[in-house]
Image (cartoon, rainbow, N blue to C red; front, side, top):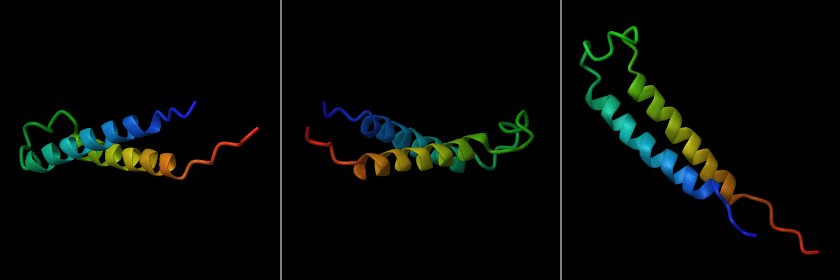
Length: 70
């Protein structure tokens, strides 16, 4: 079968990561929001990580090995 689950999961990670990164950038000056996480902008860093993982998954799905003919 030619089903590749990396494409929809990669898109999901990328889209949600972009949204979370934007939220982290917009709320960067809110010190009360990030006081519980030792003033680390968790939304920003998690969003950036999700974007990187999503792009890697999309790249791996693009450069996958051709199926072998038997």
